[in-house]
Structures are given as C-alpha cells and as structure tokens.
Amino acid sequence: MKEAIIAEFNQRFSGEPLIVRSPGRINLIGEHTDYNDGFVLPASVDKYIYVATSKRNDREIHLYSIGFQEECKASLASPGIPQQHWAKYILGVAAQLQKNNFPLAGFNLVFDGDIPMGAGMSSSAALECATVFALNELFGLSISKIEMVKMAQMAEHEYAGVKCGIMDQFASMFGKENKAIQLDCRSLHYEYVPLEMKGIQIVLLNTNVKHQLASSEYNVRRQQCEDAVNLISKHQPQVQSLRDANMKMLDEWVKPVDASMYRRCKYVVEEIERLQNACRDLSNGDLKAFGKKMFETHDGLSKLYNVSCSEADFLVDAVRSNPNVIGARMMGGGFGGCSINLVKEEAIQQLVEEIREPYYNFSGLHLDVYIANIRNGTELC
Ligand code: GLA
Image 1 (cartoon, rainbow, N blue to C red):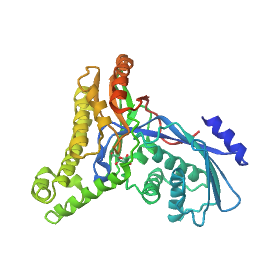
Image 2: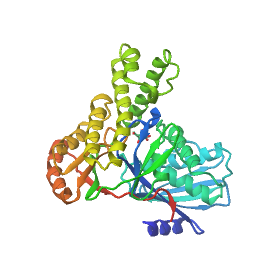
Image 3: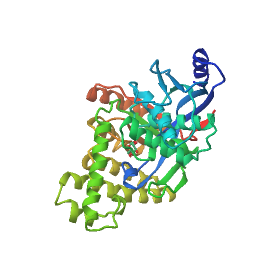
Image 4: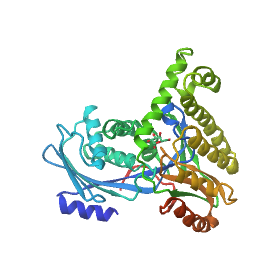
C-alpha cells in the first residue's frame, strides 16, 4: 500500500513525501463509556490509513483520496467545510492546528487505507491521527501525542459533527503491539494490558450495515447522559458525569422523570463497573469470565442503550452458545459495524462457514470477516 501511495503522490505532486500510517481500533469492552468519564479497553489493529504529505510554497491545501478517486483543494486561510466527507477529517485537523496557533503552511496530502469504512473500526479517527501526526512532523511543531489526540477528537466534533469521546483517537495514536490500553477517560491515565490469549483470536464479523443513524443517534445518547447528570447534580452537586453516579441516584432522580433516559444511564453505570471487573478477569487469566461480560455488554447495548441493530444481534446470538466462542458483542458506536468475537483459533473457519449463509438469508448482506492482530499506533513509515 505504501508504494502505491508514493507512486500516486509522485504523479500529482513534486518533492519527497513524508509517510505516516495510523491504525484502526478494536475495543474489547467499555462501550459508550468514554464520554461519560468511564473506562475503555481498546487496542490498535493491523488495518491502516496511510498518508503521504509534503510542503507547498503557497498557502493552499491540495488533497487526494485514492479510495474515492477524488481531490479537494482548500486554502489555509479559510479551510471551510468541504463537500467530500473524507476531506472533513483532514481539513478539520488543519483547522484545529491553526486554532491552537500552530504555524502551518500549505501542504499536499494523498491518502489510502484498508480499514473498512462504517465497520466501527474508526477509520475516521485513523485519518485524523495520521494527518495530525504527519503535519506535526512536516512542520516540526513538537506537539505531544495527547495534544494531537485531543485536536483529532475536536476535528471530529467540529468538522464531522459527531460529538465523539476520546477513545478512538487515543487508541489509534497510543496503540502498542499485543497490548490493550486500559484508559481512564477522566484522568487520561492509561496502562498497557498484555493480551495473553493463547490459542484465541479476535475475530471481527462485519454486518456490512452502513450506519445511517449512527452520528445523529450518537449525539442523542450523549445528550441524554448529560441531561441525566444535570438532574442528579441538582441534588448531588459532586456528580459531574455518569462516572460519579450509582443506581440509587438513577432510581431516585432519573427514573421518575424519563424512563428512556433511565435505561440509557443504567447501561452506562453498569458498563463502567463491568469494565473494571473485566480487567480483573483479564489479569487473573480468567478469559471465560471476561467473555461472559462481553455478552452482558452486548445485551446492555442492545436492550438498554438501544444502539445495536437486528443484524448485529443476529451475529451475537448465532455464537452465544458456541463453546468455541469465549465472548462476543457489538463493537463501537453501533447501528451496524462489526461484532467482536473471541474465538478458539482452530474453530474460526468452521464458525464462519456455519454463520455466513444464515446471515445472508436473514439480512440479505454479505458477511466480511477479519482477524484482528494488535499492532503499534500511529507512526512514521
Ligand atoms: C464511537 C466514538 C467513541 C466511543 C464509541 C462507543 O466509536 O467515536 O468515542 O464513544 O463510539 O464506545
């Protein structure tokens, strides 16, 4: 892929490009907890966005997407919101850098990647992280990784209109080979957790449902959580986010006001606790207990948080009583994307064969399957 991008770059622009790649991510457990100041357990995987970039002598930004075969031109003075969806992530990052007073000049950028889009593997965060990392190198800006992550997240808020938490950009930037990242989204303290899953692989089953609802419903969930915190904090001013809430508070202050909001918050409060117990399972080497919690997370996401879809439910239900599957759940923001499954290595092929046709009969969609190998985060290459 790197060679193809360099070749495309050389056809369009002059000068030696700087190449950066940034990975997609999985998340083992802890979903919709990041923007509630909870914990997450993501890892970066061997699917990437590659960008090639070079300086220009003017104050223009010239972009080209190999995958979309589209170009986009903008000026640094007023990047604006482009028509092309993909360009929003790049211009969004350039805008953030300028907003934070980092001196940019014009640049060329070509990108491509193999992170499936809309699969809940955060291809957009990878593009943002690759862009911010590349521009940091290109212009010698000396920005810390965590600052880059925050600017990438804000690019998503302000240019793509999704009020995402910090997990995706953090995982893409900070990923480490064979480690998951246990991240406290409040303090941003993190630990690398070794993933010793001998004989077990992380298998992603892509529903291939394109998230139509994903961004609007995502923002609605986030708002419901904030509204609930406002209800509680009237009585308990120390409660700043759902991280500080417990079931008693929800029963007392949220349930009587809004039943749907109550269900959403119940899921979040339970999930924040579940992740901490799941991390204990991992360090005790108890994968069975960990896997059971993944199914519980799925049920919460599906029945309480209402961000699953019938296709993802189908895939999780199809493996629920399979003794070769340790755990499974929908992954990411929801309304499509992938399910994440921990599967005994020797049983993967058979599992996929058994599930493919029934899935097609159920949904009319083809199933794509990826084995996720955990690799390093954003880097020069
Ligand atoms: C999306 C968001 C993340 C996170 C997940 C759900 O991927 O970008 O910040 O909230 O959904 O866990």
